[in-house]
Image (cartoon, rainbow, N blue to C red; front, side):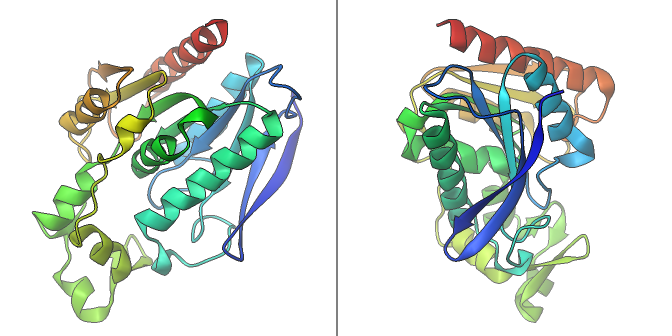
Length: 258
C-alpha cells in the first residue's frame, strides 16, 4: 500500500488538516488528485467515499490529497463561519499547493457543494487543473435559499431570528445565507476552465435534482454528463460507487494518455 501521511495547509492564519496517500512525484512524472468534500462532510467523504476513491486511484498510480475545509473535521475554524466564497478560496489554495508540489496540473474530484466550489476554483486557476470531476454538484443551494427560503427542506426563518441555522446539530451562521441572497452566481466564471471535465449525477438524488448537474455540464466548455439511473446524492450503494470509480479511473487515465 502507498504511504498515508498527514498534511496541512495554511489559510488566512488558520490550518486545514488532511491526508495524502502516496508520495508527490517531481516534474509531473505521475498524476496527483485532489478530493474536495461536500457541505458538512470531512476529508474522508460521506460513508468513506473519499477513502474508497483514494485507494482506487492509488491502485492506478495516482497520489491523492484530501483536506477538511475550515470548520469541518479536525481543521481549524467553526462551521458557524462557513461561507461559499471563503471555501472557494480554500479550494484554490489546495489546488495551488498540490500543483506546486507536483510541478504540474492536478486532477480535481469533488462532491456536492464541494463540486460547486471546485468548478468556481478551476475557473480561477484553470492552468493548474488537469481534469475536473464533479459528482452531484449542488448548485441548488442558491435556489433553495433565494426562492424557497430553506436548506434541504428546513425553513430559514428561525435561523434569521436566532442568528444560526441548525444543520443536523451543527450551527451554521447567517453569513452563509447573506452571501447567497446578495446575488452569488455559482455558474458565472465556471466556463473559464476549458479543460476536460465530467459531471456525474444520480437520477434519484433527492437533495440536488438532476438538472443542476446537467447545467454544469452545459456551462463547462469541454464536459461530458452522465446520469446514473436510481443513484442517490451520497452514492450509497456498492454498485453506484463502483460506477463512479470506474468512470473516474478511465477519465483520469485517458487524460494522462492525452
